[in-house]
Length: 234
Length: 234
DNA sequence: CTTGACAGGTGTACGGCGTACACCTACCTT
DNA sequence: AAGGTAGGTGTACGCCGTACACCTGTCAAG
Image (cartoon, rainbow over all chains, first blue to last red; front, side, top):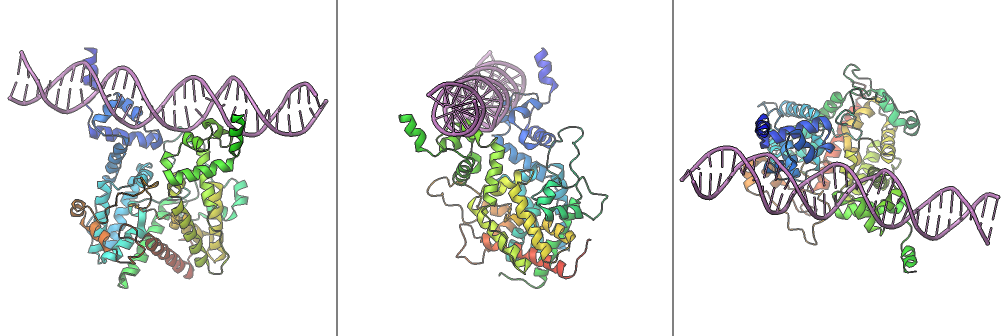
């Protein structure tokens, strides 16, 4: 009777509920602490119950990725291919900022998921519609790489550290640690530069949104130049 | 006595020997199957012995990364900044092709290792010497992102599948699986294009080296254009 | 020559992980 | 009423990283 109440209290599991809970857990605790056992606990269920809805952890990750990719705004038709791509890529970036674990998860996959293939397929379509040859479109996809999906893919990624370690992060050092500054003077100088738009700067002296758009436009403009001069293979 | 012989047969462990064995193991079996236990076995030693030379698995990975980064050719001084960068980046790419696990390992690290900081610091130095303002150099570093380290960071990475699953790989499908081609026509078209230099093409119709250089030059040329027009912050 | 510190390899053990497999139970169909 | 089926349970196995106590050979100081 108490058990019956217990059973009724929680909604029945479903692939969708599992995926949603997994994404939420990864968002707030970091992907590295997402385990089948913790996820099951979160859902008030025994670990093995999950396997009735996902076939294994890898497939769970696939589902999570597809869920995230599904949040990206669809391509809006636009006579200007550049504007269309730019807009969707920036939307993708917003999504990936909400789910900091997703970029790495996507990159670790050997094969793209259906949702990603859909996304990329549409992007290629937009290029073709914009007058790109198959060949040039091909090279463009490579050149954009994962930036096509909104990754900034920095080497020094300050944003990624998922799952704040507490209510108050222990104040990340605003500048280089001085000792390091001596050893890497050029990096220190660069870290100090940071002149642009101090308002939207987070902790470091570096506006990630600006940097992303800077790089994105650099690529898009370069690509446009190739297209305009009627680039053909090689 | 037999034990003594056993003890003498193998060279004593050292941090360096551990790191080297770890890199070799990751190269041939894939990073995901590199465990402290397997590594120890490879070295003819009990797992805990490793902890006398590396403090934990994470620090082992740091050491492996530094070892790999150390293989990259140093910057050769060159009056032409573009040539200098290009050359070193292509060298980095060669190294990462030898160690397919390294790109992801580097990207997963939250903080760069000393060797990486050294590498990047020198690259910034080359930019500064080439006449870049601190600000522009900063943006360039972001724009290049991990391509600065020789990553191609593809979404559809055919190369990465580490540790061949057997002597003869079961013939990767040279073309799109047909069913997928119907669903993602633009991607299929692109995959088919592949007109350039069929000689150096691996299995897919796609020359990775060409694509990497294409993207690299697109970026470098765009950057050069900014520099030439005396770009100042914003 | 003894002693004792110390560097480095060993053995055992713990808790966490993914998941195979047998089970049970509520419900739906016939 | 009978039986199939979808979905949650319990137990167990083998792998992982690594804490901790231990042993052993080497070498310097007394």
